Structures are given as structure tokens and as C-alpha cells.
Image (tube, rainbow, N blue to C red; front, top):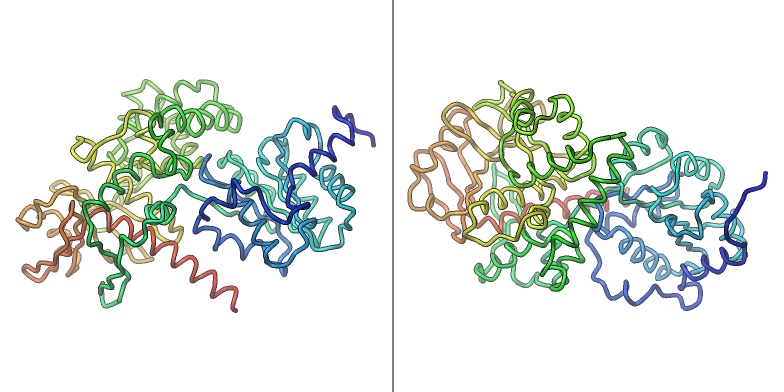
Length: 485
């Protein structure tokens, strides 16, 4: 079978060689090697070195979270382990020179240029895989045909990747989600970890890692910066981008998903409707919604809005949180729910950065904390709301019959002075037999006890950091245990 190739074989081979400079010097481009590694690299590498199970890795996540940089750091790690650099091939599928070529054709060109054999242990990476039509079928064939080659693909059209990976890759693909930065990662990326100190606390009889700081004002300023700019590594580290986050984040992260990725995947005709809905949600992140209210407010049919919300969640732009009553027996999933952005800096980019006194600071603090919990795939948070009150975060036992703990998120020190202002969480604890509650503050850390309930006050910034750090530490520990066994 012959293929029409717009570029000559010589041009293609030359481009492949240019995309892999480590073949010559054993090192990735200094531009990438100078960048601080994301902590998720420690979770990704075990999948790369897994040899018993013949699977390709599908690296997915929202745009601009650092997937390509993670791949380059992976390449350097493989080289540092003594692997011949020629045995690692990186190909950006979106490059025009590769247009019209199948994955197997690209692989064969690589083998020709490197003079290697497909029976050797090789690492082949296809970046921006979503630009190749039916990529999942191509990849499945490669996994079934070339048993010694480790295939890694990545892409930014996260919803499309997950959908197609699930449809065609069962048993042959391993999905790996790279989310926006946690606050802990943000602090690590900016080399500010000296600001925090480990401080173990006992929670429900179990010792837990908590963190405190002796510089809470400085730490809170970094927390505010995280809320405004912190979800994406490039934004976090660039003052130039931070001066105009709307231009960068809106164009590269939001518009491409709303105007291109989702419409092409789901056949959405009216992208203006989708854009309007997302803008409404982003402005009101952390608020309670109903499909009826959203439909009435936007003029879009309720069923259409329901689908759009599912699409936006699949694209990792939003997270829907479901509701329980004052007891978990009465679920209200069908009527009312909260929606949070997966990262608060999306709102700042769409509208404007906020300060510590902004009327929306409470919602954004809540959004930031919920975004940390979204990194934990083993945990489903709820919020409680009933006729006389509300609690921001509730954890239920696995059978969803009993609350395990409750958190009230405040950007205020007022509750430390008057426990009566905590009547909602007090009633919730009494109703469900809880003897402890965590309440976040601006900058006060202290513990108070009243009528059998311990109120643990901790700054919102430190709670946000603690959640994000513990989630990643737990993932790393689980991964290491799996490797050792």
C-alpha cells in the first residue's frame, strides 16, 4: 500500500532527528532541564518503567499544566538510568511535517533513522496525540504489534482523550491525569517550602500530617497569588504573564477547549451557549446551582445545560459537588448541587485578579481548597445543606451512611471570638455524633472546646497546603508500595 506524503523521506528523517537532540549529547534542551520538576513525575515514572504489563500510557490533563515538560523530564530520567539516548524517541504529532502519517509510519521512520530494531526495549513518545484522527486505533495496533516498545502518548484535549481511551484502550492503555498545580506544588515550584513546618495532629484517633508557618502574612500572600495565578506552572513563574493573565489563560486554556476541543468532540453547534454557561459558572464558582435556574437564566434548554456541564467536567474545567441533608440519608443530587472551577485562577483570567478583601474571596478560597481534594480520586466530598444551615465539606463513610468529619471554610477570624457563629457546624456535629470540627480562618491557629465538641481553627492557606501535600504524599506512598511488592 502506498501513501501520499507531502514531505520527502529525507525531510521527515531530518525533523525526527531535530526533535531528539539527546541522541547527540545525551541531554534534553536546557530550557526544560532548568525547570523544576513537578511532584507528579514521581508518580508517572513507575508507569514508564513497568515492563510486566504491556500497556501504553495516555498522559492527559487540561492545557498548560506541564505535560510536555513532564515528558522531557521523563526522558532525562531514562537517560540518567543508563539507557542509550537513541532508544528514546519524542515526536510531536501536531508538527505539519508529520501530517498524514500514521503512528506506525512515524515509528518505522524513527527505527530507520536510529538504525534500531523493534525487538529492543525502546521508549516512543507521541506528544499532542489528539491531532491524529483515530489515534486510539493506531495506538492499540502498536501495543498489540510491538511488544518490547513502551509507548507514551499525551494530549491536551482531555475530554476526548479520556473518552477514546476508555472506548478503545481497555486492557491496553493506562490513563494518567496531570491536574493543575496544588498549592503545595505551587510552593514547591517557587522553592518556598522553607515557609512551612510539619506539625502532626490527631484526628479521630489517627495522627495526621498538618503544617504551620511562622510567617503567616507572607504565606497568605503566596496563597492569594496561587488563587489568582497558581494553577499553571508557566503562569506561576512568569510576572510578565501575570500582568495579563486573561490573554494567556483565556486564549491557551479556555478558548481552545470551549471553541475547539469540546465542539469537535461532542458536535456542539452553538459554542456561544457553552461559553456563556462556563462564564456564568466561573464567575459564581462555589455557588449552589440547579438545572432549572441555569436554564431560566441562560435561556438554554435544561437537558442541553445538563450535557454541557458533563462536557465541562470531562474537560477538567469544573467539578460538580453533590448535596446531603443535615443527615446523609436524604440526598438531593437531582435538584441542587455546587460547581467549582478545578482551579481558581481560571476565574481571575476571565475577569480580574482579586485581593484579600474582594467580595468573592470567600468563594475563591473555597474553590482553591476543593481543587486540592479533586486530586484525590479515592475521596468524594459532599456539602451539607438543610433548611436552617449549611456545612462546606463533609466526608462520608464508604457506604455513605455516616459522616466522618466536617469542615467549615471561612476567610475570617470572627468565629474564633464567638463559637455561637458556628451554629451550623455545631448542629451538624451534634446530629451526627461528631466530637470535632475544623474551621478555617485568615491567620489564626488555635483549638477551643465547648459542650463536647473540639473546634480546630487553622488558616485557610495552611489547610489548603496540607490537603494538597497529603494527597500527593499518599499517592507516592501507594505507588512505592506497589512497586516494592
